[in-house]
Image 1 (cartoon, rainbow, N blue to C red):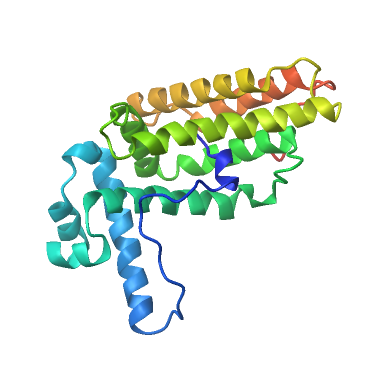
Image 2 (cartoon, one colour):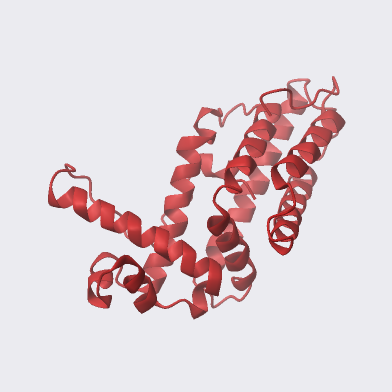
Length: 231
């Protein structure tokens, strides 16, 4: 699903933190290599999941040795968490930084979810990766199990907060259950992504998702307003 919760970053993840430094010369080359590794990892996790993905194959895709890959990411677990963290940071900078966490606008949040859904279909490998990993991470021993538990909890909390704020502001119909709305949004988004994948991309996911969000917006707002042209 689009990631409105990424406006509130999770507590420290398992990925190693990158030291702040001036990006010149060797550092720029290292950053470029790291980006190439993360892109390759997305493809492998999307096709094979975490458990079957091979660090050796990721290294080969990037044109470096296995030892060279371990210089950047000392384990497959570190690589997985770095991929997930990088994508969250991208979502924050691209979409959700404008939301006020103390007074989130529920209509604007739905518009941003629709906008990110349009972007997601231009990155099919990333969407497939999240779908595969979310299913695979159901087992408690999976390295991303806690990540996905926390991710879904954050989504529910942020959407519920926006709906509750909308109720208090007189925008959303009184008595609307924010957490129920959030769980419905999750179920619809995940279901549409599965149908999109099974249709080999023939399902117009952005339109289907936007239409649902527009109906939801009309259903829960006092004025019965939809997403408008920006949604």
